[in-house]
Length: 185
Image (cartoon, rainbow, N blue to C red; front, side, top):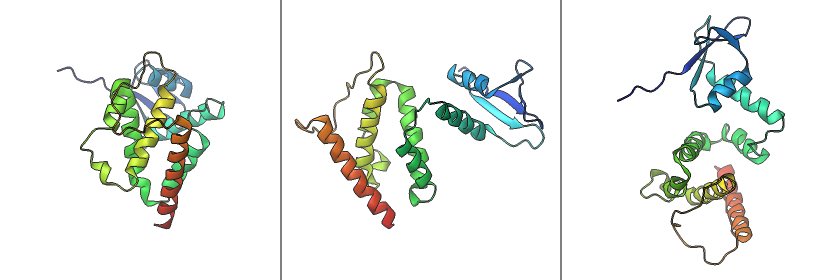
């Protein structure tokens, strides 16, 4: 069995310059973003303290792209992320996001299948059905423009002849109700 490639090690010097240990040269945040887009795992370590700074720099890359108008995260999603740091739902958000992106990586045909998979330990969580529907809507929106992607997985339950606008309005209503319940906790 082949060993997975080790992450590209980037060292941050006291001057805050970033040093690529593979090529023995200095790199920028944009270079690091390029490595990641090319499929490389990256690890950024502070040379002096040995602290892992990878998360900090990844967040900085996302923030810079967002500030340039490359919006991937809508304001309401960012707001919900900030809220998640101050609520009991904090422990569920990272798992939910990680699972969503893992499904994206696995391939479009598995996305909807995984959302409808049974048994799923999260299904017992209050509001899970609403989150599943929102995730399905998110995936349809995100993947709708990707060539070759179609929702071929069987639906868990048929919604009848309800049009997408009505379905979205219902999801928004359910989400608002869930937010009210969560705020009372």
